Image (cartoon, one colour):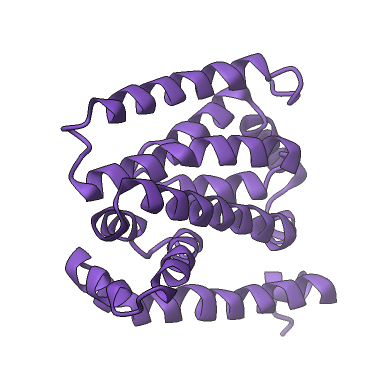
Length: 226
């Protein structure tokens, strides 16, 4: 009796290797760090850990911001709030912003390198075309901007989704750089306890948010958004 071939057997050797590599990557880059960092699931524990490192805490904190962005199950919000509490709004914002931009850029290129190939194996061309058209729209980019800008919103997932589409890096990178100023700024200020006592917070947050949305709309033709 001939059994039907599984999707894995139908893959080319290259796509099989990609899938195996992706599985290994998920285990070591997502599951292992997630289990390891469970002890940092509250702000006090994380705060104590980075304070114990002294000057090296700046590097460790920025790395934690990157890791908690790439490894989606980790709590980026806790990392952000702890930074504002320990370092104050200014330094925490800078480290969070760098970490967030680097993390989402890694997400985008990982999905571009690995995710697209996997999708093309399991999804027909017509559905992929619809997916590309949907994510290549101005509305999709605006939604990604909002999800990255607003603290505690899951912008990390958006970077993975866009990486699997036909969106070019010349569109993704400037939007990501601008969008993550909001989440970094917001978490740093909220963690420091000054978010609702310093009038600068809401003013800057609102102006940058509205300016970002307007800029994307103005750039839609240059970015070739539908």
